[in-house]
Length: 173
Image 1 (spheres, rainbow, N blue to C red):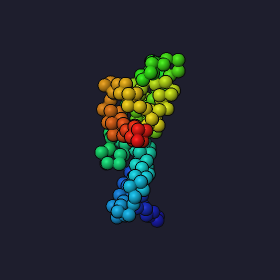
Image 2: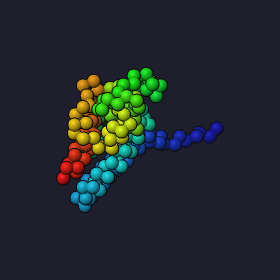
Image 3: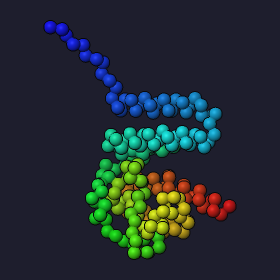
């Protein structure tokens, strides 16, 4: 009887991703001085997007950030069915109550939960402005983060608020 040789074990998906991530970082370290700040940010965005997609595939809850202070998410992302049990409330900014949107703090494509701890009740206009970093400072100040989870607060401070601050600076120049 002929013995069948086992092929060497193929690297796991996780091992492959770790290697891709390392190659991204090696490339960045080697050529970083040749990049403009915008190119560097775009490069990091691609790497972080790939990392976020990978962690979602694995069911992990981690958001890669530019400054490498990665955000660990709670493991209770909820489900789409639970979304409908979140009570409809007026817009947290203007009080409009005829149309209602649930705005994610951490976007769902980055693993954000469909739970009140990661959402604001906003009217369609303020939802659009929130997602596109165009709220005014007074509108931003009306948002209450006290009942939001720590990951949402950190993401809001590190990512969303920075986008809005850029808008405020551009608007008043």
